[in-house]
Length: 189
Image 1 (cartoon, helix red, strand yellow):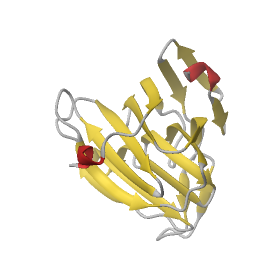
Image 2: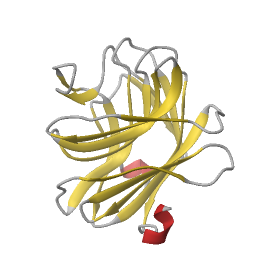
Image 3: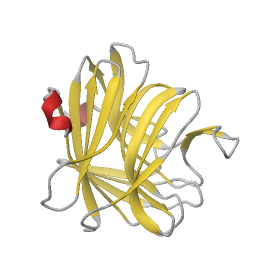
């Protein structure tokens, strides 16, 4: 399935080895719209596939974070004004899990990674116009990070993303990306 994916803003350096995608970010790349900073950036790297209807997408994410706002994670995107990204990000002096819902304007929430192993499993589930974001560090259970609303068409793009707003050269690795049926609603807890 991963072989059928394509890039939005393809980085110059990337490779695919079986179920492992590695990518290196270009200079000052990001996905963000307006809020607080007053700018719009839509030049982050997004390796994606189209998915119709409800789903759960998962991937294991790791990156060589060194600089403020370095990011690697997952994305669900309807268009440049309506999308979700969630993953590891350097903010507040540490690597944490950030989640951004963008509905014309971006918002941001942050949660610590527990336990901090250098990689995190991410899971995004679509239930109609609701998106649920979970993460799991190590062998722990899934932790609900965010449940939010987006006006989504029947078909959206789903995949993994990375960006580095303050530099170039973030090395990100994504493994075991897969899309399947949505988890049960009871799985949100």
